[in-house]
Length: 91
Image (cartoon, rainbow, N blue to C red; front, side, top):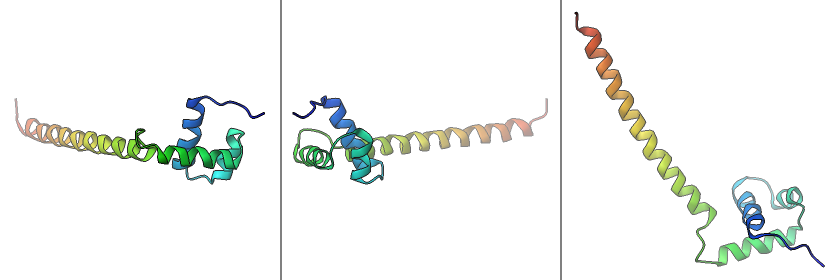
């Protein structure tokens, strides 16, 4: 009889298969599961509309990182301008 894997194990295997750039065969071998098992888990993940997909998680993270990057650039520009201002003043 087959091994029962946890939900977390399945989710991690699917996430790696969809985001790592490795082939499904490589991912299945790395996780010690069959190729058909991994393919079935991926199909189930894609059919379930209730679960946010790994792709949507990545898109959300990219969006947050872009916002943070924009904020950090603005802060850097303010500090750069303040440095120029105070360097030009003489005590």
